[in-house]
Length: 260
Image (cartoon, rainbow, N blue to C red; front, side, top):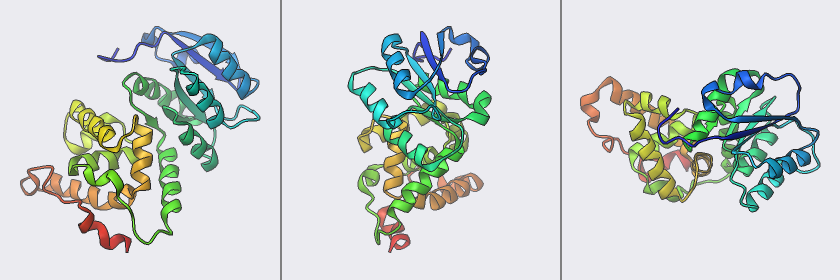
């Protein structure tokens, strides 16, 4: 069990497809009571969520329903039901991904990688983090990029308040990396990454990783990423040239020519 991790006492898994070995997919040391039900419709699953009031809801997005997932989930949140949300997508459909992002789910994983990704998604929820399947993260990047491709100049918004190291961390988050992978890439500790992420949340006025990623993408962090990662690689190759995380400049002025 992770230090300072959320305690999960109950999990509701609304299955669209039968036969998933829930007991094998959920970490055995979690100690949570698992409610596995056959989800006939999205609406019925949401009703069951109100009845059971689980700490974590795992749902398969192909479950049929009259309303979108974002409508139903936003209704759940409007009732102050503090339930974590892990969405399982069968195919990385861009419309489904956009709808889940609008619903601000905690994690999105792929059905064909469920054995690998579900434990990470659960652990991420326990640590107030978000896990995104890499293919899903790329779709979100493409969506935001297409939304803003017609704009002649990028408004950086609150990204200008971030330090260079915080920009590096945010760029890594948009690539779908978890905290441990970010720490390894930047040669810092997990706790340092978490501190940077909390600072990012505060400066961007967001509450979670998904919101931070979406904000960053809307304001051009994906277009800055190539330069950011090039600087990171250069700092690893020649540490003496980059002794401080602030030494590499990602200022609005230095990146402006890329958006004119």
